[in-house]
Image 1 (tube, rainbow, N blue to C red):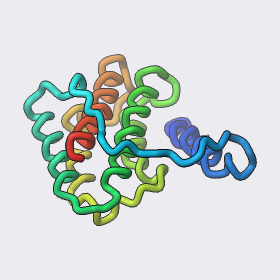
Image 2: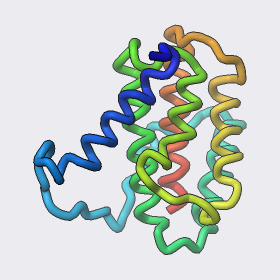
Image 3: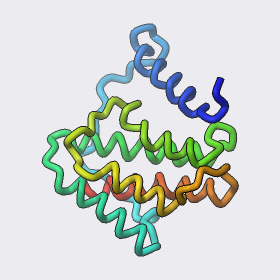
Image 4: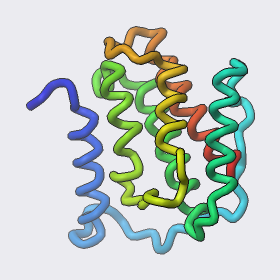
Length: 166
């Protein structure tokens, strides 16, 4: 197994259990999930750096200016998964060990959730990548304590920016 991408394995296993779980009674069925009509924005994770804040505001504007009828659901789900990835990176030092894995998990999050973003949020991918580059840098390096906290912040900032745009 490729040791550089264990997060893909864990996310893949999670998806299989999620996708097949109800079919084979692997996970309980709690009924339909209701997406809140009002998104609660946690301003405690708002970036202090003016350059990072400007990128986050651009991301919020992209969401705000989208006419997608799926916006509320897409953003609630995507924002939530980015916060969960931030928590995973913060708590575990064995699953995500380098910046390449951080970028990979950021890029595939919507695909794993089966959120179709194509044509809905023009420029979101570019601005999100810009945010990760600004917070985390562009080098592929191991996550020491500093880089790990930068990765956590990048995901939290992205989650915050998405929520602000709804």
